[in-house]
Length: 397
Image (cartoon, rainbow, N blue to C red; front, top):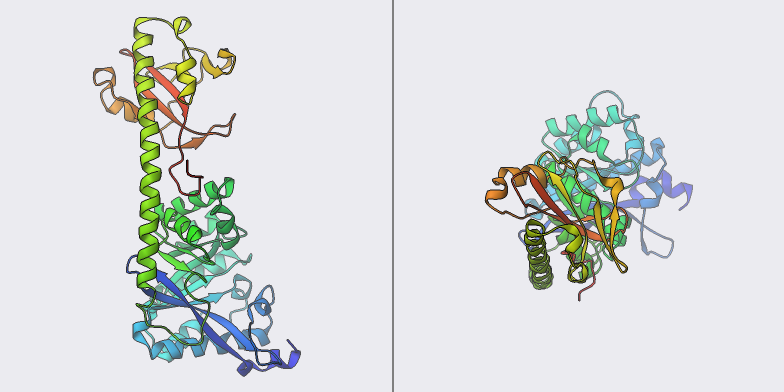
C-alpha cells in the first residue's frame, strides 16, 4: 500500500465476518474487518496496516471504517452484534476522557448493547485500558479480550478489565485442536473464561475437527471459514442453522462414544481399587500380586491417614514388579480436592470411592486420575491410575 492510500481514508471500507451462536445455530453477530482494493481491483485485508502502528493518519482511517460499520448496523437491527477492534497501543493517545468510539455509536443511532469492543493484542498501559473499559461498560457496550492465552492478553487483564467475552488465541487454538500440551493449555484458558462468567469465542475455525474442539472448550460463538469469510454484505441469520446442528450432532455422537469408553475403563479401575482395598484390609502390601493392577492401568498406590499425611512408601508398578519409593513417606496431600470430599461423604462407614479430575502425572506425563477410599477408620487408600481421555482431541481407540 502506498502512502497516498494511507492518507486517503475513503480508500478503506469494512467487510463483515459472521459469528455463529451455537445456542441458536444462527448468526449472532459480525466482526468488522478493514479492507481496501489493490491496483488490480482485488479486495485485500488492511489488517497488517494497523499492527504496531499508531499514527494519527491511521487512526483517521480506522475511525472512518468504524463509522461505516456502525451506520450500516444501525440500519439492520436484526443482524445481531457488531465487534470492533481497538489496539491498546492507541489508547494512551486518546484525547481527554471521552472515547471517540462512544461518540460515533451515539451519532449512528445503534443500540450500544449491540456493540462489542475487542481489545486486541499489544502491551498498552493497563490502567489506561481499565479506565476505557469502564467507560465502555458505563455506556452499555460489551468488551472482549482478543487472543486470550497468548501475548499480553493474560489473566491480569481478565482480573482488571472484567470482560464480557474472551476470544481464544487463534494460533494456539489451532495447535490445540490436534492435541498435546496446547490442548491442555487452551482447555485451562476456557475453564478460566467459564469460571469468571465470560462467553468464549473461537475464531479462525476452518474444519469440523476444530469446531468440535471449540465445543469441547465450551465456546458459545464460532467464527471462521468453516462458515464464511468476511463479506461485504450481511447474511440471513438462519443461513448456518442446518450446518451447525449437523456438526453439533456429530460432536455429540463422538463425545458420547468417548465417554462410554472412558466409563468402561473407569469401571475396571474402580473394581481393581475395590479389590485392592479388600486385600489390604485382610493382608499386607507384601502379599499383593501387582500383575493384574498394572494391566488395568494402575501406576501406584499408597496409604495416608485422615489428615492427608502419607504413612507408607509409594508402591510403584513397573515391568519389573512392585517398586517401593520411601521418599514420599510423610508427604501431605490434604490440599487435593478429593480429600475433604471423601471426609464429607462419611469416611469408612460408607466405603465411598472418590475420583479426582484428570491431570498429567509429573513423572510419566500420562493422563491420570487418583482414586481414594477409606480402608479403616483413619486410613485412606490412594491409587493413581492412567485413564482414557474424555476429550475429542485424543485419538479414538
